[in-house]
Image (spheres, rainbow, N blue to C red):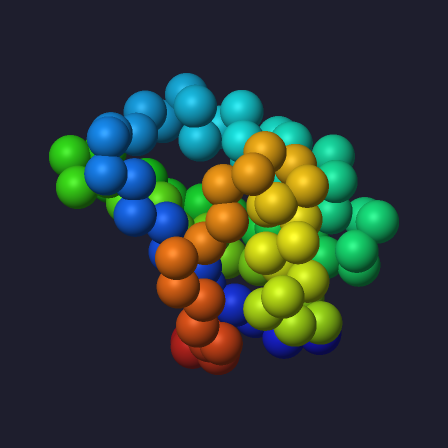
Length: 83
């Protein structure tokens, strides 16, 4: 498993409550794919969502988003946690 940070660019606006609902759907779907969504951050003013996920691959992480709510990431980066 590896850590990934994904980024969503929502051009028509994003609300924290909507992201919370999407995250709950991710949590309900993730076990099927051996993925664990850990945290998320939202910048409502810029229409950005950031998700930290522990997954076997970036594609596995995006598959959970696709199946849970259809909002796949625009970018996915492998990351390493610092101290």
